[in-house]
Length: 113
Image (tube, rainbow, N blue to C red; front, side):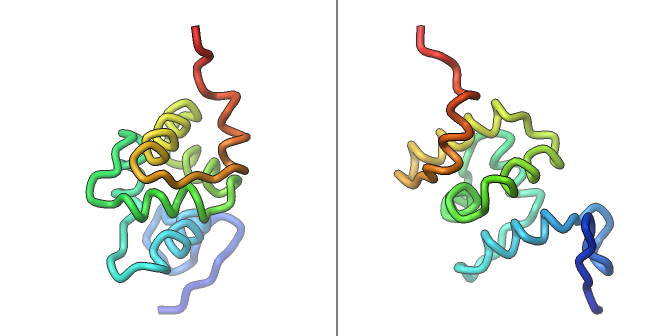
């Protein structure tokens, strides 16, 4: 099957598999033998839990461009506050961080009281 990327979808891929999903999967799965699915990645981020995928979730937050992180979250119904919570959980668990993404997430974090 030939796949072609358009502005919004990969032609020939399963319905609902967007170009953003394709770029995210290519980024998070490239360095590893085991591939995470879109559904598993979405669930890890939505629940702010790394489950069995700590390196893939860390790669999502550290290697994917910030605009892709935000587009992926938006496309999968993950609020910016949940995204920030998942990022902080990943950072606490792995010690990995992304200063560019973090600067955009700072405004989303709850202010200390």
